Length: 420
Ligand code: SF4
Ligand code: SF4
Image (tube, rainbow, N blue to C red):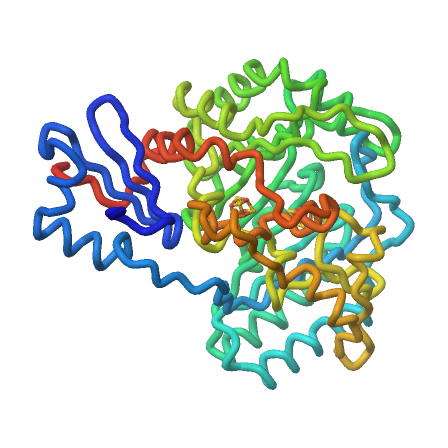
């Protein structure tokens, strides 16, 4: 009989064994010097109690994520000061007006008044185009929603995806004061490659200014703030990643809250882009760890609640003109345009379309898959729908063992048996 649930993976390193539970993200490591084998380990009474309480032993998994966050991803300016070569946006729409922002606020008020029991947290995510082109809407909505969260005893969380060009120390401080404390900024490689891909509207490069901004703000980063430096990797810049990683570590390796992150460029726009077929995240993450740099913890992609926001109920993308979507990538795809927000703050959306994103069938392969709790066949609903297969696995499915070993390298094991 199997010792553990279907969702527990066991990995051997040279001197220890690691167990990782995909149901709850808990990991346990023991050295071979203490226990001869897994049977001896799990029959120890203290260990048995731990395994039992951390749900390594019983298959009582519920196939539904209980998500208690109301998240709005707000495209507050759909134009951008950049024209990146791989960008999928058409820049036909401009800034979100105060009127639309007021409708957003009415929607949030209604939702948390009428359905208060559904939520623990409100999350506002500033997105574009380039959100810093419309700072006054960030100020207006942050102030109002922070008040609402306080009055209703809800947690508040806010993040921004910005190209970083306008992120001066003054604007950074303003955002921190507005409780924005997760920043995602793209650096696409060495200066030469970044400046080829991430250009201003007038065709000039942007690397020097973004790096200057980051160097000027890094000493002001508060403990609860994270800056993620995202590198989009395609065929063209893949070969330069070693140099990119060295540069970024020499500039920001002294700041724990600045984390590197790598992402494969996808082909979602109308432009043909040369993509790297294999998933590069794990390989590049390992290179950063080996050089002592700070990188996004891999557990962020392995936990039980890591499906895409587009797959979750209560998560909507709202465009600058009040259109309502699920995914931030496929903005011109009819499956993704759910409807619109009216003046009174009602979501006039096609609920059947919405369900195509949030509701999914699981097939036999999913039911017998170790990754099921953290995947639910919905890590990327857009790819799932487009692939037209009964399930859509991420390329990392074949890398579970390596992922767990990276977790160990990042010192993110929950229980180290025998450690002082
Ligand atoms: S989609 Fe693939 S990775 Fe996800 S649960 Fe199903 S079989 Fe596993
Ligand atoms: S549905 Fe897929 S493409 Fe769209 S935001 Fe989610 S992960 Fe990205």
